[in-house]
Image (cartoon, rainbow, N blue to C red; front, side):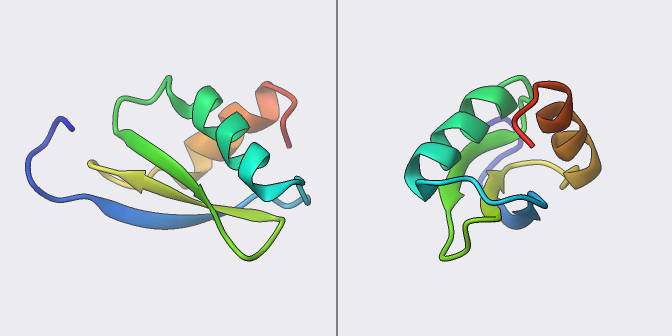
Length: 73
């Protein structure tokens, strides 16, 4: 973590279902490793969303754009 002792969790709607959820979270985690603030990506009980754990400002538009560019969503 880069900014200290706090982390935040932001649910990111993917707009499409990715299954199985655990593999989807891993795929999203790998792609979002480009963003230094992203600490982890966790599955949710919804197939069209993940939780982004981050230690900086939430950047859902940038995260979603990266996933779209990579062809994940």
